[in-house]
Image 1: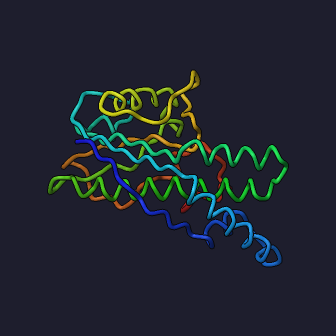
Image 2: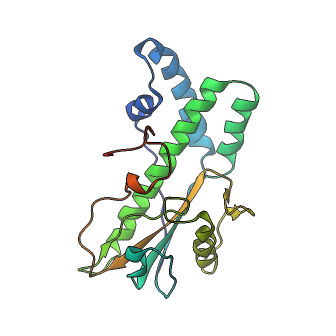
Length: 209
């Protein structure tokens, strides 16, 4: 089963400010930047949100994932136009606009991924549950595994992005991930576990650890 969904982008401005640690003294200036960038995002973002649900024998050397014969392969991309706008701000040394736009785009990707998960869950059979989200590049999941997911999806539909020789998605405002699906899995409300991330423990996206 192949799903392609349309999404409505509604960013949480307060959440973005918290992540950036915007001070009260900077709020008025940042609000002006935010409104300008919001218009640019709405005009430039080209969302691609795809999920392929299949039974197969692919393994990823992750016990929970490999215990599932059925998997959901997912891809989210917000297009190359916004990437060029972002590069332009940094090239023009408009760093505050660049940093704010980068956070807004990161939030956009995560929101689209979350909406894709919710739509995908509607297609599950009664009694089926999901694992947490597994993304190549996280702890215990080598980035080169991204090629397996990419080829799986490309075999069923044309994706707008590509993988470079380092297994990175181009354009880079995109993500690929996979879920295991099975009746043996407990009901799970958690989408992503921060303990699997190789990033800094001070990461502003990190929760609970």
